[in-house]
Image 1 (tube, rainbow, N blue to C red):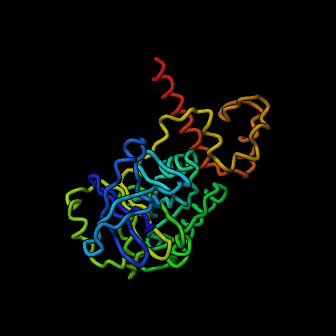
Image 2: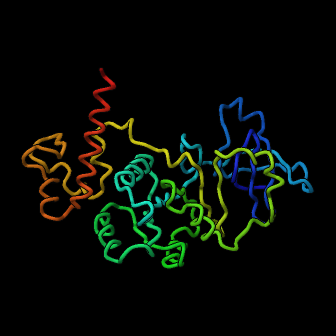
Image 3: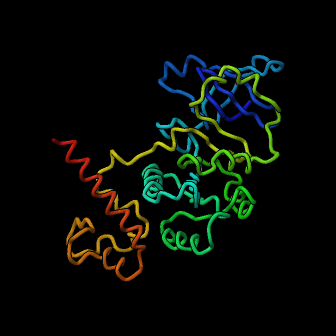
Length: 295
């Protein structure tokens, strides 16, 4: 029987099988010998031990399209980076950190701004213009009044999406809204997950529709760029790409060098001045981190 691991707690793997529900499974010892470990998000083959009690064992792990080490998760299609328009105000440096972290891991991103009911359309448009060339589609919505939610549901349909963002932006409310009336066929699974009742920091896939899952974990929001060589930063700004290699100086940092094609694009309004300032800030931060590292 084939299913997908939706949660892993204390050596137990909770495998969702379409039409059958959730099975509580242990992994076979062979995985330990082979130095392999099942991850949340893995498509697996299970052998049923008890259909009545919904227990089984993970017999095989099917090939992964991708995986993250921190947090441990497999087979992501995209990340939704969620911020709010107000309370709290969007921290755009942090937004860029999320975009950079995901880009380095090869995960496509979607940017979502919640709480549009608290701001004017002009404020939304300003952010749309700043991130229009970032390579990440941008969606504005309000979980509270439902405005724009239908479009974001379409973005999530048929995909496994990691949900990331700072506290207070409405991640829990968003998850409840997109899950709606959809529930696992097993109904109330709290009894089966009783071992994890006191475990608050674990990875979980939340079923929100046919072939559609949200990956919810505190760990994804802690991704940072501290270990990144500063020279790689330019590649994480999609709007810089048409101008890379066209600067007067080879190895241009796009900060103070004359003849910089990127700075000329900023001055000509082809690159967002705000995004460029984020680049400068993060470049200096990485530069200082390198200095501390080699002292």
